[in-house]
Each structure stands twice: as structure tokens, then as C-alpha cells.
Length: 150
Image (cartoon, rainbow, N blue to C red; front, side, top):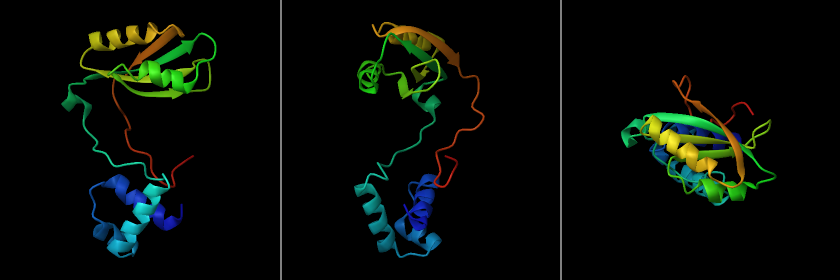
């Protein structure tokens, strides 16, 4: 991805509803040129889609937790996706290094909902044990940015 595309993506991350004209004015391109670049980035999979960022509380999700899962034997990411993807409160799963095999992001309306979700995670025949951390407050919560650390 060249620097101009990084700038375009940066504008889209800040405001996904910005027009191609607004982005073009900011980066020194015409609106059609920005559209061509965005279409190309989508075709190459560099931009995978557009979405709305919604306050979880508006959806009734007042509590969130991160659940470390420790599996029996080797479990593929595809198996984790299949088994954990059916739990509506699971909003994210990532395999990780360290002692745990994966970390699961869970959001629910109540502590009882978190507990029920953790119990559903534990019922997988592949999960040996879990360790749950409930989020008390979010200190920094921003989308990834082009040119950032990493």
C-alpha cells in the first residue's frame, strides 16, 4: 500500500462516511481518482468492508469480559470459529501466544449473561479450563490506524 492509499484509509477510518470529494480534497486527488483507489484496495482485500461503530450499551450490552481458554491438545482456529461463533455474546476470538490457546471477547447485558456465555464456552469438549477477566472501564478504544506501530 503506497502512502497516498494509507492517507485515504486514514480518512476512512476517521470518518467512514466521508465522500470521495472530501477525501480527495484532503489528499490532493479528484473524487474519481479516490474512488478508483478505494475500489482497487477493496478488490485486493486491503479494505474488507465498511461498518458502523455502535455503542455496545445501545445494543443492551453493558458488561464485557475477556476469557482465556486453555484447550485439550491442538485445536485449529477453524474449530474455534465453528464452536464459539454460535455463541451470540462472543464478539471476537483470537489465538494467542503464551499459556492460553485463545482469548475470547464476550459482551452481554448482565453479569448473568457473561456467566452463561462462559459456561457455554466451557462446554466445548476441547476446552480444558478458562480464566475470565471482566472489563471495569475502557481507557483507550480506537481503531487501528495505517502507519501505526506494528
